[in-house]
Length: 143
Image 1 (cartoon, rainbow, N blue to C red):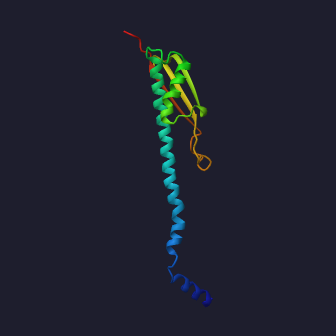
Image 2 (image 1 turned 90 degrees about the vertical axis):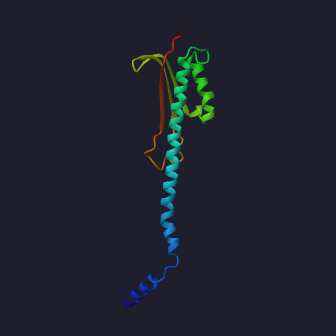
Image 3 (image 1 turned 135 degrees about the vertical axis):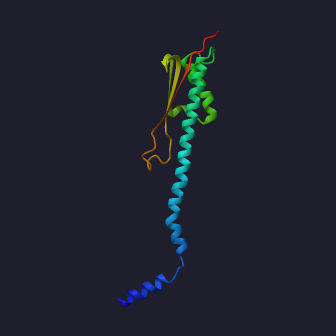
């Protein structure tokens, strides 16, 4: 018993390597926080970009012009505008509804449903699998 006490006192008396042990304990927690903030920010940025893209497309469809006269042209507009934002049409579904009731108004509605491409989706099950953005814009009639 005294041998164990002697070894314990000898071990506790030295502080060599304490920094390495503290770093080994705290580094994974610190990295998880840093990468979690980065992933959450990327998810929010993607959501905002899709919202903006769907709003632009709904507005384009509602204006009296030939650029977005049909749903195919609206999808082409989304692909062209989205290229600047890093939008990937391979992992997204675009739904264009022309002349629908939206918030009590005649409007055009655009919905973009995109798969979330998070590299940590398997580690954090609370992350959404899909990001959905929709926008309505009232139909503009020429005066």
